Amino acid sequence: MSELLTLHEAIEAITAACDEGDGLDRYSWVYIRGAITQSSCRLYLASATDEEDLLVDQDGEALPPFAAEHQLHHYIEAAAFADVLRMQRQHQPLSDVADFAMALDHYDRFDVFLGSTPIG
Image (cartoon, rainbow, N blue to C red; front, side):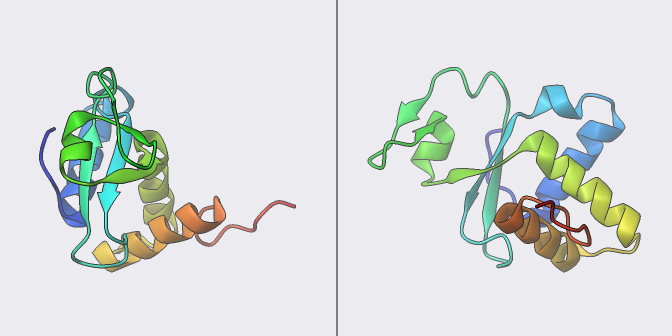
């Protein structure tokens, strides 16, 4: 999917892929521009094929051409993104985009699901 998405659109795309049974095959990485908690953030869902021909940016980060062109950065593996969505829905079934943003930000910062107790 070579397009920039809002968080809402990315949630819908990952959810649809998982519902159709190929979520882990359709997307491999999520790239981001901005902060996940800001409505202005944009995401790119990269497929495994997108990850084959990587470019190295000025910071030494290897990125798919689309991500490099749009000044995106690695954010989270698509499988982990889907897991955060699933866990958030289990804990708070009526979650909105802001709730998912908070859960994703928490996972990104602490490597643990929101509402879970960190190990160690």
